[in-house]
Length: 190
Image (cartoon, rainbow, N blue to C red):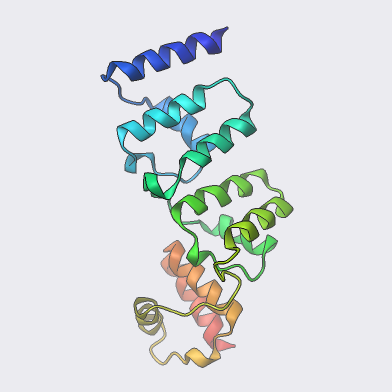
C-alpha cells in the first residue's frame, strides 16, 4: 500500500511540471544504473526513469526495465569503466576489448558486474560483442598512438600483442594517467 501511495505521489509530482529530482531519487537510480551520469539526462529522461524505478515489480525486473530504457536514442552518457570493473570483465573474458562498448552497453555490462557472477558477465559481454569483433586485437587511433608516444617516445608498436593492445585501450579509456603509463610501459617492455 505504501508503495502504491509513493508511486501515485511520484506520478502526480512528475505530471505537475514543477519537478526536480531529489538526491535520494538520483541515488536510487544510481543503485539500479551504476555509472550513469544522470546530470547528462534530460528532465524528461530522469522523470521516465523514476517512474520505472517506482513501479511495482521485483528488483531484477525493475533493473532490466531501467536498463532497457537506456538506448542510443536516449543518448545516455555513462562514466568510463573503472579499474575494478575492467578487472571484473577481464577475469570473465580475458581477451575482451571494452573500447567498442557504447554508453548503453557500458550500463548493461555494469548490471552484470554488480551481480558479481563471472558467468553472467561473460554471457552479457559475449552477447554485446557478437558481430562487433570485440574479441579481436585493437587498432589504435591516431590520438591513442600520440598518447602512447607521449608516454613512451620510442614506442615500437610491433612489440604490442593483441592482449596488451586491449589492456592499453582499456587504460586509455579509464583515463587514470598512472595506470596508462604502467600498462604502456609494461606492454612495450615485453
